[in-house]
Image (cartoon, rainbow, N blue to C red; front, side, top):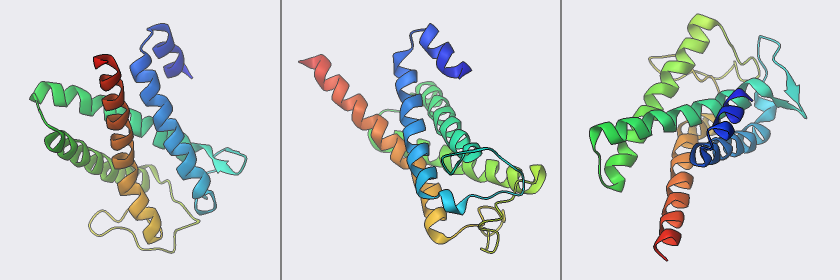
Length: 159
């Protein structure tokens, strides 16, 4: 809520739009996978959706895009494929780091999917294959949606 207020106050429509897109993706994902989220810590739910993963995905995707945007400019990357590669690498590294920290050091365990093996090496993301694929794909989907919208808006500016 504070982030929405801040972005609205600053009239940063671009970042507010990106936050809304991140929230939409997170909401769709957490609704679809709601039966696979059940934690050893009593997190609040709303309409059967666990709020912790909803907000974690929203803020994670949004923060990722902010980090990516800053680094893309700092590295002076030009071209779709270089930008996409940077985004995916940053996303996957941060995803694995955050999941590992949450599981091993903070102790957040998803008991609904605890019977599944975690990823090799980091032993995190104990979930069925479709969830693992989704975890590694959500950031990519977010990137493509934002890129598509940015291209549409730049075409409209040219008209």
